[in-house]
Image (cartoon, rainbow, N blue to C red; front, side, top):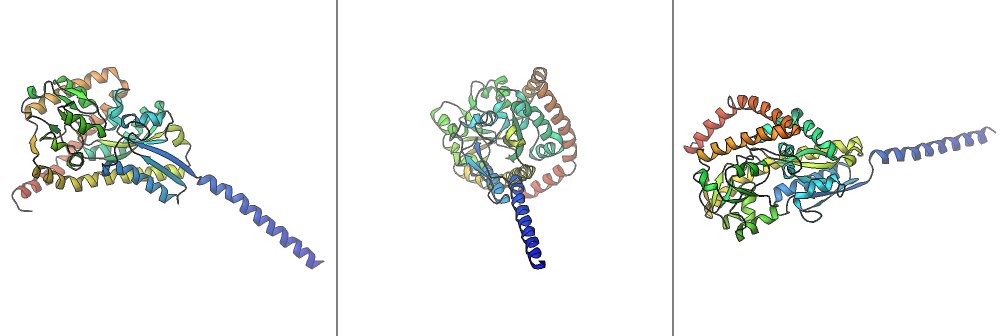
Length: 367
């Protein structure tokens, strides 16, 4: 009897352990479900740094989840045109996009504040603003549109673009057809330019055929890849309209909220890593590309003080007008303006002094 009782107890205990193991499996599966998302980029594959950020996010997420959460990356035009990426996310065509917020200012000018506005924040200020409440403000604006966004790249201050003719005075801008994105297009209109918003892959043909007279894009590394110097030789700086333009990963808000918290954190970490790496990669590559462009015939020129001052005045007028029309624009703009005032107060004390001294040493050949 004792032996039979022992065997019955052992069998019962074994069955209980098996049942417990069976019950534990669904809990684990629920915490780390198998998920596949699609990401549409606003950029072509040949722009390896900016398009590559989306691939980096996807790879980071896949590795961190042991392949349970995969993101399929598609270039501009493979699912939807590049300038419709965020719309595809909002309506559920795809779960995610890598794009620039300011492509969508036709819906509301406040979208511009997610990327860059003329004479706005530089890259470090942009990231600092995001980290200290800016991202929350952007997402408060995006939520009614079924969108959620995280910073996922920054190019640093961009170049002022490629022109077929010299731009010495403000009158030289009048009548030009220029590919230029965001609010800069509205400001350029005030000084006589006809702005064109054209997706990255279509810019070179438009410039080559004369459909446009000038274009801005990013900076030396990407501009060299796109070959703009072959059809427009005057290369101006700086892009006063993009002091620190941010790219974002846009998520369908319902899909984002439906993710396990662990997957949300993994995605957030992947975006933060891509954000830092993009800026570092551009900083590492632009100097070499700029030297090569000049060697190949590009004529490097700064915008004149007259042009800068006239465009600054036009920008301030534009912001006053938009603040009256869009409460969301005013809220975000006022926040960035207040942040910028303090940021430049600090920047001129240490950063500016250090960099100015070191640039003098570089010019004097002391480096």
